[in-house]
Amino acid sequence: MKIGVLSDIHANVYALRVVNDFLKNKNISKLFVLGDIVGYYYHPKEVIDILKKYKDAIYVRGNHENMLLESLKSKDYLEKVTKKYGKGIKTAIESLSDSDFAWIEQMPEKVEISIESAKIILCHGSPWNSDFYIYPDASKDIIEKLENYQSNYIFFGHTHYPTCIQLKKMLAINPGSVGQSRLVGGVANFGIFDTTNCSYTQIAIPYSTNNLNKDIEKNDASNTYLREILFRNRHHE
Image (cartoon, rainbow, N blue to C red; front, side, top):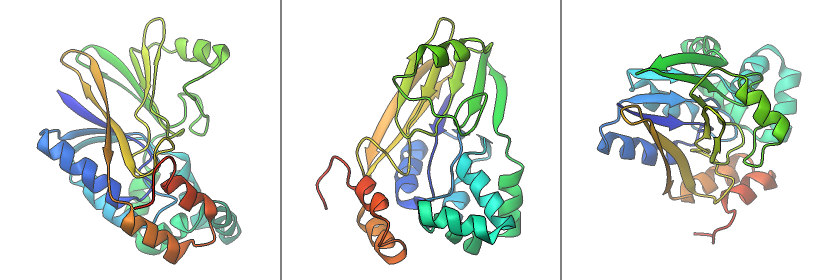
């Protein structure tokens, strides 16, 4: 069985459409979605609608989902988040339904499953904290903490950097970000996990940034980070 491993989509429907087409062409119908479906960008409803078409998907809640839920309770918190991250969360509040919010709220922050004898942990930041960053150059202390978990694979996201860390008895894998790569702007990063031979394939697919760039100009023209990250390590289209 082949499973699509996606993280950090961040309401970027342009990137997700490219990934979705790839998965459909490969007849992949099962997903691990490692959090941060929302945040930063502006098409959360379209993103959720695409994801919900996968009848066999496991989701974990990321820090931007937590921001969304907290922002529903506090206008002051929403303004703080908007100032730092842009209007992505505010757009989600305006465009999602009560059933969408309930769907997000019921997502766990960590899932432990077994598939074909492989023990797997799914999380956003780390198994111990959804907002903890595990970078490719993770320290010895972090490595040792990961090795305490009784698992064959840990799939995580949050950093937006594809990562594969070989531990003593397991692999810790970050597929990178579908919607906001911090390696090269305009490239969707994700992976395919094949349970039949326990192999993982990292994939990077470019997508057009034209419409997303227009969205940023319309919604968050003063947020220099969103423009910078979109064109990181590439020429303007």
